[in-house]
Image (cartoon, rainbow, N blue to C red; front, side, top):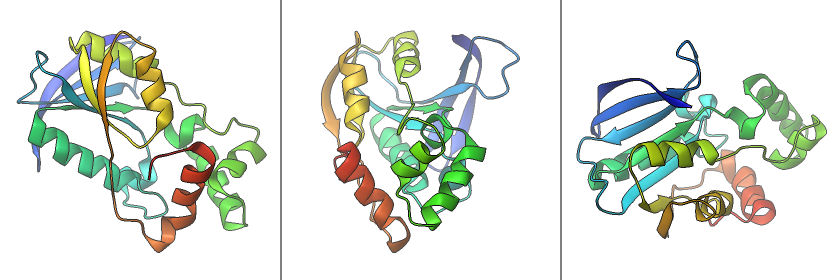
Length: 192
């Protein structure tokens, strides 16, 4: 995986250099790094590793907290000259079509994890080695990791990147996502 293209993207939170990473220059769904204009690789960098959630990130679904987490992460990384790494692994790695099928199962009473298993998938098949590769490409050696997910902390801990601290990413729960958040906390050990 390598840098394929980059451009400055002005946002409500300031200017970010958006860098697309993929093996193939024709890849239509590359992983992304949004590097704030005040980024300083010489200091521990605030980093958010965010997995794509089209329903939450783009359409504002309140079924999860993903979109709110992404916006909060952009706000915080902008304030501290940080980086948001956007990994294209929708629905804990099962893709959008299967995620929508999982939603139907959740509406029928399964929790978010059992729905994935019912469809024949792992509870969470995401991987974070691409995020480590992106951080290395950016010259990042030390980070403050903005996450509630212990798997992300562990993945980076087993890499050359030094995690100086874990920063909680707190968003207010909603009635629509209360069961989802509870399952993440109780069954996956998320820090909520």
